[in-house]
Length: 411
Image (cartoon, rainbow, N blue to C red; front, top):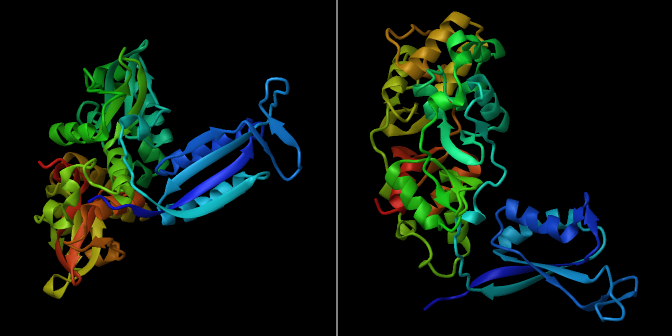
């Protein structure tokens, strides 16, 4: 039997003519709710009403009003409504806000159009590669569709930059480098001469706007794809969706759905079902040279620092190691370290110090029986790719976004 869940109903009464930064207030409220991942919002236009000013507004034929009453209604979990209420209150200078408790059964379509990013950064096939990299860093995105007129000719991802353009460092590690080191790659004649067309992946796999989130999940998990452009029936680019968008949508839906038929079967899984146990480990006094070797050999790009009985003491990411030597202002060593981390260049540089000198001691963990939906929420909220799984403080393994996608898809 499907049981309703506790919800709160937020109703915002405003005038149709009220504006916020040049746009209708009701429209701004709905867009803010969408951006913040609320379950949904509806706008109703009244045909008669009056407010605190006692002025009657009506839609009668002989007295058309330009400021008819409008109601924005949002239904979501109590926690999410409580979080959104201060935001809505700050937006409404004239009107009323009503909060009501209730129960609801959600039937959520989980459409790709509801989770995709619409404001897509794009480049032309003739765009110079340095400009492509600059756009990716400036917009803080990991992929960009390549356009030839109105047609999607291909897509450039961080993997394309590493494999085809021989860029020496991942996009998410660029911020750890000094400006001079970061821009040195684009100053080389070979890199500067390249265009988007020369390194893009083509043809680009796309999703139709009518695709469901569940179908997108299966495609991403089955083809190991992290980002997909979204198109209309005629091929027009409408947006782009990432695996993070898909995971966030499933996490939101699992939090408010009164039934689970609309969710992938794997959402009933736990962290234990997506566990990666081949995790590199080391002690706090392990030399950094050994830590570097473990980082280079592992696809996880991190080493868990443990003590007795596998008690977790900290974590060393590849960027922790890089940041440490950037701060020591050793350009030559930094260059060698970059090549070792990204291109597996041998021999590895000799590093001074131990894991204790660079490790992060605040480690985000999950219990092996944590529901996969909660694991997803943590990954999305903390903006991390992987989470350490532990029981009684002892390391069991790591769960990453790829494993979560495959577990959700039942693969």
